[in-house]
Image (cartoon, one colour):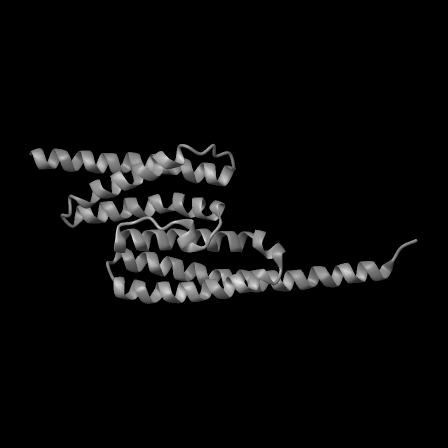
Length: 193
């Protein structure tokens, strides 16, 4: 009537998945920590440190991706998703500051959903960069950043974004653009005074 061996097997499988999931969380956390360090180094204009951190972040991401390929269910775990989108954000910010270009999802080797989530997060770092530049007397940089973010927003407007997390992040770009427009307006007034 009841196959107890099947339940024993399912329990063992469940325990194994939990163990693998815990390891995934640890590996994801290693990547996340490095993404924050990369962004912070770039904000401090310490590109030598950022370069080293990017190399280590890419190494850790490779280990994470190798781990995920062993069990495809891991690919949909929240910790993995967050690590990838934060990786995207860090790399996009790093290359914008270093090269004044937007890396593609092919450059980063990520899927569209993760790329778009990271891209939307980029706007907050760009606002911080623009405000920091203006406070240091670099009045040109906020305008460059505003134009860049405006182009990103224009491209994203073509999408029919329905997924709630991406929708929320996309909507935040609009507010970040408003902040940048205020900063640029204040700088224009200051230049006329």
